[in-house]
Image (cartoon, rainbow, N blue to C red; front, side):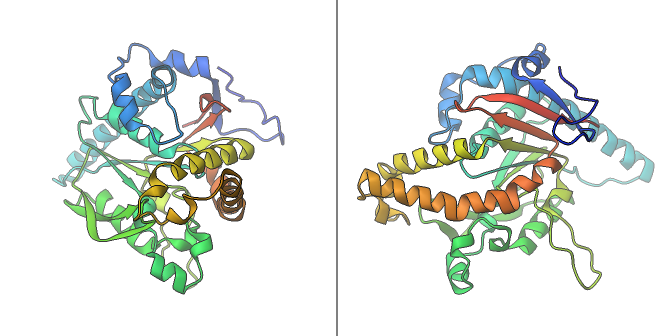
Amino acid sequence: MDERVGHNRANGTVSPYRYFTRNEWAALRADTPLTLTIGDLTKLQSINDPISVEEVIAIYLPLSRLLALYVAATQGLFKATQRFLGAEDGKVPYIIGVAGSVAAGKSTSARVLQALLSRWPNTPNVQLVTTDGFLLPNAVLERDGLMEKKGFPESYDQTALIRFLSDVKAGQARVEAPIYSHLTYDIVSGETVTVDRPDILIVEGVNVLQPSRLSRDANETPFVSDFFDFSVYLHADDSILERWYVDRFMRLRETAFRDPQSYFRKYADLSDDEAMEVATSIWSRINLRNLHENIFPTRARASLVLTKGDSHKIEQVALRKL
């Protein structure tokens, strides 16, 4: 393990992280058993985001072991506080944030974590919510000229997202979150998912580590990440992310885009060259800009940074020191 407890090589500052190579991190699995099959992984992975059993063993089993220890410690602390206060509050979910660029593989990572953590005896109930459901409806984005900034912080209903997380963290039962359709590229009107006091809630989204704009009237301004007990940031170089995004776009052109209800149906019949040009343009105009302006600057706020290489494999792990 390379702790880098001296100085950061880039700017001479002390790093708040301990850095691990892939093999060093894999060794921390200890005797944690593999509870997922190849069939399970096939169902969990997103399009153009391959994940192997070896990746789960090397990266996600050690992470699930670490999180199981963190959750158990937090549960013990909560019970100790209850005894001290003489309180009988309901349980408070442990909340994990998963952040990173479009095409970084957040959805697959979040689903794999959900599956692994639900198999630990003290956390059988693990739920997953994406912040896509808190995007403003397309009609509002179009009215306000924000369609080219979909996924940017200003395109979300931050008030509703903060209220949702506050209610969940307060231990309230049956808290509802809106649902987003990647087919229609919009909020599904009238449909919600219910979060009912899980042991763990995983919240996945590009900007979940983004700080809120400070209030000018001296009111309290909570951040989404204020409600997180742990956070993961998935990182890869810009050029790699662009290629993954374009590859995914080209694959979707042959599948989901052909659905008559798809928002992107207009791209299904483009030639390969035309589709490549459109995908590259969307990436540079919207996703790359969002990454540079909003997403990447939040990486240093994460508890854990997973750095991917060209083949989608995680090559380095950085764990924030406690």
